[in-house]
Amino acid sequence: MTELDAAAIRRGLSDATRERLETLEVFDTIGSTSTYLMENARPDAGRVHVALSEEQTAGRGRQNRHWVSTRGAGLYQSLAFAVASARADFSALTLALGVGAIRALERCGVTGVQVKWPNDLVAKDGKLAGMLTETRTVDGQLVVVAGIGVNIYMDEATRAASTSGWAQRGVALEHIVEDVPDRNELAAAMTDALTDVFADYEAQGFAPYADAWRAADWLRGRRISIESPAAKHTGIAAGVDDAGALRLDTETGRIAVASGSVWLHGAG
Image 1 (tube, rainbow, N blue to C red):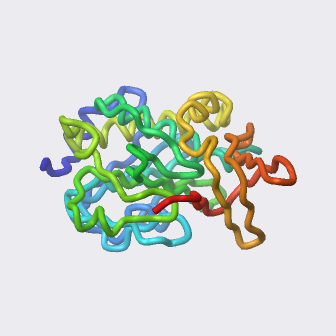
Image 2: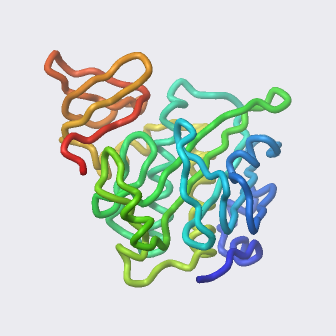
Image 3: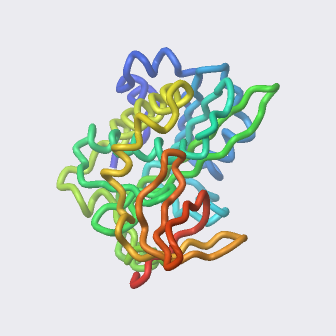
């Protein structure tokens, strides 16, 4: 296992990312890289602040669910980016970031990864990674914080305990590739890819990512239920619309759901 090294990560960055990079920090232990950036990041417009950690003691996903962040077993990374204003399709940014994360993994030799609406990466029908996108306003500037946790190594006890309502169990890179990527290489690739998404999204929105997202859509054609505080819907997943909402074919017709938790029928 290679320890995270800020200098090594910086060397692996593209010239375009280096120009946008305001700060890159690597911690030994932290509560949550996303919480840290939500509380401390103040990048200038168009700039990115990156935080990584060997372990997290309070890693979290959507709806404050706990994200297991064992020392050295994953990539625990968050990026804060300052944007001029939120677009009409701003809610689909997480989906575009998912496409970016797949591209980062492909750059490191990891193929066959899919996306599960709205914020998970799937490999071999197991959860490989999760993403969380949050916003805050600092001195009138909108700052977006995107956190990603990628399972790189996972012992069998952790894997057996990581069952969910939509996948049999968690999965790690060690289960899907023979040569596990170096963590610094993966961190650089992820920083490049997500920074590119941030920069492109501000100008172009979800449209440039829609085809790639649909091609990698793991839910499409599956029978699911979507639960939100307002309602529960059941039907067949039918992709996403241009704003990133999940389309669902129900008994009464097709609907579009903007947010909610997905449960796969028949999952263990």
